[in-house]
Image 1 (tube, helix red, strand yellow):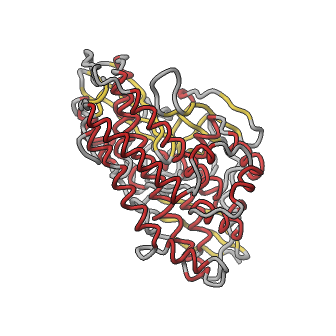
Image 2: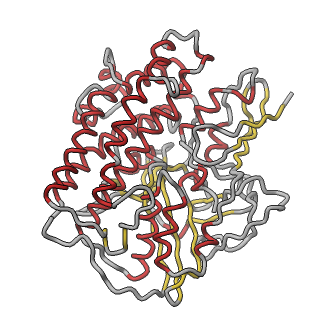
Image 3: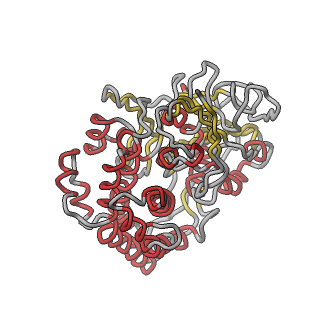
Length: 481
């Protein structure tokens, strides 16, 4: 007999989230993901002076504020073809990478791993060690990670004045230049991040971690190793995380961290079922509202409006259903590195596809890449050159800002008239991953990933469901506007 349960609200999630599950013989058959909180930022921005976007967009979220800032900056920059000062690009990369790294560490230590310390796993041989290390509030891991995270976020004070919701990020670069002493301080902070990663997370050098180029190499490396990454891998093996949350959808990345000859991460669409990479075409991105509490407008975000319809009979979420060439796609660190050609991630995908363990591996691997990249960007800052180019703005036209937040692809679409915002549309990473069904009845990525998940007799308290949800790391306040 099929029964329906509602899981939610989820704790340790930014914003509200509910998941309705149809369960048959102890397995999820279908899922509906609901974002029950309406934000209205796209309506708030409409009609305001263009540069108000730099004040309001960061306030969409308190954990990915820099990402929202940089998407707004990129959209405004695109309207007039403004070229930012190279120092400003590097400083923005540093701030953005600091925020995203902090996000990855927060996800691992405070959101994902505490679920493994639950009493429901008390009979597992690893539970005692994991509970001592990762139990919420009491675990020793958080006591180490939180000071390291706070130290990392001091980068925001140096480069952006404050965090979150800084006004330092502008179309022409960044407003705060630093001196030699501050650069020394910046490099010291990045060195402390590297020390934490090498000593606590990986128990090995970042160079050795990034040299791992296959599943077989990862298996050899982890054998007998300490560190929290190896602890996670052992638990993931025991719980079969490679079989949880599996998808066959395309993986999408907008590309990230620009400056120099090429971005740190490339843009594109990667098909994990065939191992093929295709170029990204923003013109084929659309938004479907068949099951969102929204009125129908244009499909293309550059032409669409966000008009709520709370009484829509078919609606079950404030989240729209973004589609790429008519299909749902998965976004995030796994997608970013698959598109960029990371050999370990590509090999993991060829073996088991996108799943819970591979998403967590990708986020931790990305922290190692970002720590090394941040050191390089800091050394490349030319302290004699400007950080901001005050180029002229016309205040007329349309632009798109496509960047990568920690959770994946973030896009801002803006249209200006008389230097005022005529239209503003936002598609956040969690909008992609947690979308409802579209007009063809095709489920969004999380809805598809939950199908087949085993559910115990407690139903709404199933830990396996929470592992799948947390592997995407929802940020619901970014999702619906």
